[in-house]
Length: 258
Length: 258
Image (cartoon, rainbow over all chains, first blue to last red; front, side):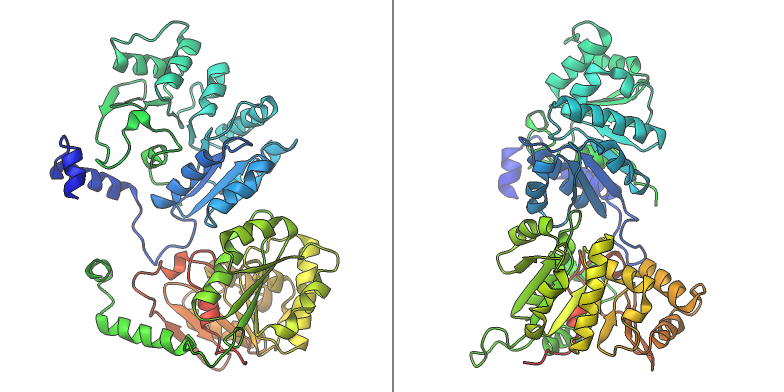
């Protein structure tokens, strides 16, 4: 503990107490009154031949912050690998099948939130399926967190999330620039990071944008806030991604409906 | 330890001593006088494309509470994944083969007890095979614990276990309602949970029913008991299933014959 603090002098014990309290507010209390599934059923869309770690970290993090069930919808080849990381996950090898959208749609009514993008890759047919999955999720009013290559898809087709109030985009620095240039047709104003996040959110019809960085910048198109309250022992946020840090995206969601 | 108790004030140290004693009574003593297999050879029937965690947890829990050998009989695709969770398990990729019943029957004479259902799924041909395996186990007088989708099968065909004194059904809240409605052709009387468990057991010819919940309810058709003595650090029973908790089903069995 001492070492943790000496490495991160900026954080006082008071800071850490505050952070713990924030985390406690998000994690549902363990109680014998509930049955499995009531505290969150999360779906992660991602995982391909190259990338199997990212969807695993997204799904296992959802469980670690209190969700009851985590499904991963990935390409066939990625499934046995992701399954082998943890017996806690339910992994569906469907994302590169011709009827991927239907296969995921079967599960959507049982899911409280979807994370789209970790380890997705940029294969054309898979992205076409993901487009269908996003549209289907919107039609069902399911909260969607878009990260990683999901953001690449959104940069190609911003209409996919435009105006969807239950979408949360979580770009890092690079992903943010790409998305901003695609949507606002101009370079990011580096002298005004907070304004840039606000403008991107507005241009996307008030979709929530969380720009990950040293200070995370969050905007819903109405206001933009900076947040720097990371746990002192966590990797510096600007170095992180879905593959290296707790599922902040998930934690940012309100407790799912029961 | 202090934290464990402060989080679960309902449990005193005395309670825990009692629980430990119960567990001690169930787990066979480790002795050099016995050879591998004498303290229990367990078979788990389950594991399909989507679900690989549940049969793993059932089998590994059997080993952790003292059994010597645990076999898993699962679908071909699930086998390498379940194997990868632990080298302790013996995994047979036979459940979706046309001669699944024969393949499992070969092993039945060597097994002391069978767990049917964790991660089984609801594929028609597989359930047909499971039906054959259940009948074969009954013919050999092998104790059978039925859980998860095994209970779904029993709700469709209660005759499969009717009157079999060595069957133990372990439904959670949802599974209990489904089974009760299928067998007693009426809704569960929620004002009388203990009586409901007793009636289901009786209607099934005195099969043992363990309804999992905040307080587990257990009936052999003669009497119904409530049990709430879970280990303080275990997940709340009502949130658990074969996939998330120690193999209570296994623990409920008497020490297997040698």
